[in-house]
Amino acid sequence: MNSARKTYIIANWKMNFTPGEASLYLHRLQSRVERIPRNIQLVLAPSLISLQSLSLQINRRQFKLAAQNFNQNDFGAYTGEVSVMQLRGFVDYAICGHSERRYKFHETDKEIGEKVAAAIRNGLTPILCIGETADERKNHETATAIYAQLAGGLHDVSEEDISKVIIAYEPVWAISSNKGARPANPGDIEEATALIRKHISRIYGKTTAEEISILYGGSVNKDTAGGFLDVKGVDGLLIGNASLVADSFCAIIDIAKGKTNER
Ligand code: PGA
Image (cartoon, rainbow, N blue to C red; front, side, top):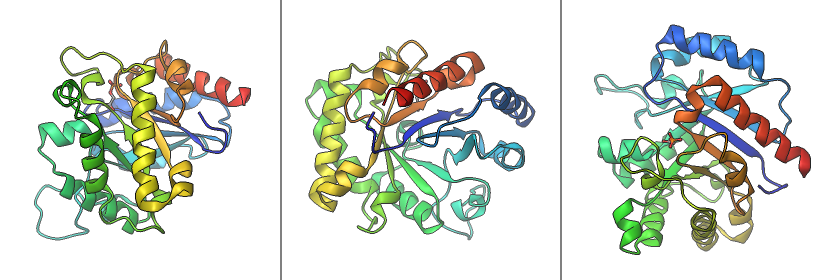
């Protein structure tokens, strides 16, 4: 964690909870999470179907909402799709390029770049997820994979807009729902965040590279969250499984609060 940058704790609920369950869960979280310091931002990414109702229920001083996915076009003949323009009244953040979108739904870097641009065009903060697969790591292609995903995802992001982007480093092999998943070790994460800042520095300059927020995601739980937050270059966490249980998610929030108090 870096004292100049905000800490983000982001819950990706994936395809879990009915709208009723999501509402009950938010109620529980809001009654347990007390005052949030200004240097911490809590974000919840529920299913699309719950966004509208949660946006009415949410205490924005505690939490903000994020879309897990959206269509990059603002409107048009795209049956079954929802655009970020349609969502912008409900959410402040938009997750782009999560590895489940890349590998289960075959989203390309080009499409992900269009989504990042669409989020910015509609006044939202894109959270661009990147990360190598197990095979890429084994074949020493981690840097190549990270650079390619950054180049694609940030293709249409101007110098003026880059400060609006958050990057989440999520190695695919560390995501808890993937077979044989294991959390990344601090050295791997530090190395990856340094690669990301190097790429940003080359394209947007050193100051931007120092200012951009980079999160870690992959098998984070209440026992490991503190260690990940201590890794140099990490400004927060993107949490899947452990964000679905109030006890564990609230414990992670408390750890982040403790760390920002220490600064
Ligand atoms: P996990 O998921 O915390 O369950 O590993 C993280 C993610 O998919 O963003």
